[in-house]
Amino acid sequence: MSQDDELPGDPVCYADMLVGGFVVDQETFRDVSRFRKSERSRLYEKRKGLTCTERAVKTAALIDQLRPVLEAVDYQRISLYWPIRGEPDLRPLMQELCNSGRTVLLPVVLEKQTPLVFRPWQPGCKMVRGLWNIPVPEEGPSQVPEVVIAPLVGVDAHFYRLGNGGGYYDRTLASLPAKPLTIGIGFAFCSLNSIFPMPWDVPMDKVVLDTGPLEVEPGK
Image (cartoon, rainbow, N blue to C red):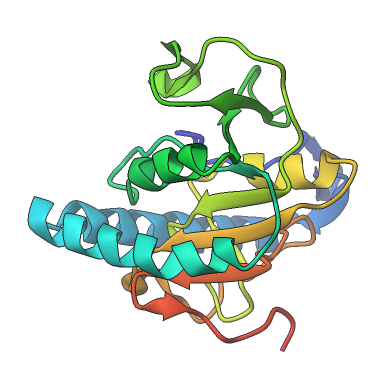
């Protein structure tokens, strides 16, 4: 969700960098950060290059692929997201889930570099502009999601996610009392061989693209 090109962490300490509680040497951190920034820019351009019709067709196909995945699990609290930067617009699916009686949650950034909180959303609820001008529910008690659907800028063969660069999903997943089912979603061109995962990166449990679910399991 972040508009920053930063990874979660703390200032440089001696010859190493302390990031998310892990010590990572500066050269590795720099090289991986440069690679991810380059891939992020490339994939943003791919999304930006889609016509409105192409994006609509791909998004409809993605929702069709995602719907049975959600129907197969008996979870009530599902976190989605408000689309930015040409991300797949799942708001029609959000309305479907609400109509079916499930609780739809949206992530909210209260402060930079802190875990997300999740507020309930339903059609017509009052929205306000949050951090980075992203619409979020104005009020409502925060809830812990059973499923987190996260948009992908890129994803690798082991289901490690390339996001917008702020580390909010990884930070949040590490802070929750129980790990929810995590589903990364995106367009087929977001697939990468590797994002060169760092110690704090958390792989997705499932990945669903407009061409269908990926079959490769994390760690294989």
